[in-house]
Length: 315
Image 1 (cartoon, rainbow, N blue to C red):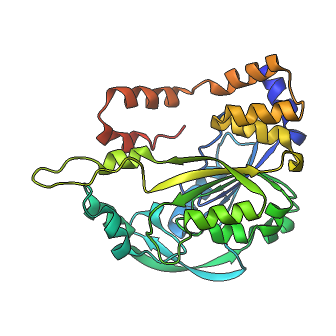
Image 2 (image 1 turned 90 degrees about the horizontal axis):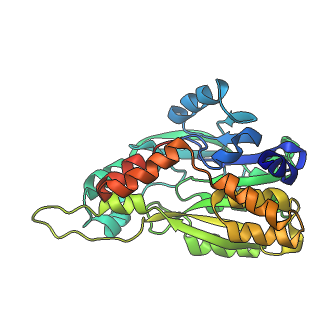
């Protein structure tokens, strides 16, 4: 019953996902994994090889392929600043001095800032998402996920045609709420561009587990306490309900992300499901995996200092 409802919302039985900054693998939307055609972009050579190995073997996606391209606002070459911690690598040069203004009085800030330092510089090939999609004959992307440490707006500029024609259903992008890189985009700039392209912000969630990690007390030292992470994830969908090309897949993805109110609105406006089937769908998508249940349990019984580490469990 539930599988039939899910399948009925998805055109051609597949969900196209583009994942830029794919180092850790795509762990969002675990409920829909078997329907996902995944296109992962990871230009860092040290992260590309294991990711390619991961997706060339057994995986639970419908299809998966990995590209070493760095998505940007133009085709050509760029410098990738490979950081001491790979998750902080970026096409934007790290600005440790400026970043320290925001975290210097937080616990373990020295270690955190050390991870931001450039380990080496790598020349990588860049391409726009508009051109890449045209070459792949991919006329619609259901879900675009960006996690590229400050270059997200550049990627969105390179997807201008797709965005303006509403050829991307859901944009899930990391945003930096404090400057850590030279010429990085601000959340305000990114939000302005998305609104210019006809998209609305429906969700913004910071990373509380990072706040928990930085908020530990240090004996003999007054430390600054933060209530949210200095990064977060913003979620955008087309602003005009009439402009949705595939409202079913957008409603499904939003429900899988936990945005049930927005999903229900789309379902109702486009007459996609009955109220009973909508409730059945939400109950199906809300079921937690074993690892999700474990994460929730650990969050309840362990001190905040440990939250950062178990948050990295794959779903």
